[in-house]
Length: 123
Image (tube, rainbow, N blue to C red; front, top):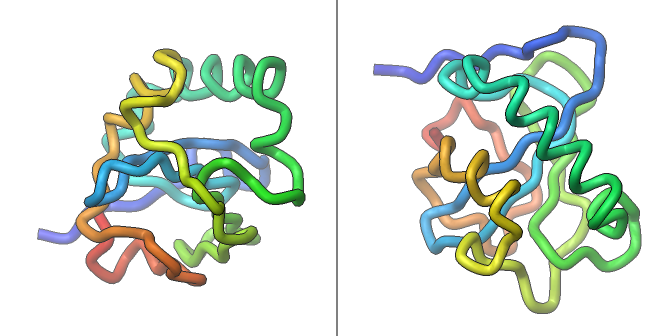
């Protein structure tokens, strides 16, 4: 059965997290997410607000400490910012982020992937 992907507030940017098949934290910006995450949008928004204040480097374009991807529309295609030298594992992430990231488990390892099409077997 295919996972339904939706954006909680079309036209607005939002950040959300997942964990890949190897246990690494993955940050997504904008675009749709797995529908089950939408039931937790307030928790995800609170985690994003926390991260913006306490981990501002996660939102920059400099070398990032985690796998980070952007989406520029409603199509579930995300493009990587860059490849981290030492990516952050979910187990090492701050609890507020790890709690929401654990809600979405990717079926694949992100590794050096540059483009993720969420609707092609990733979730």
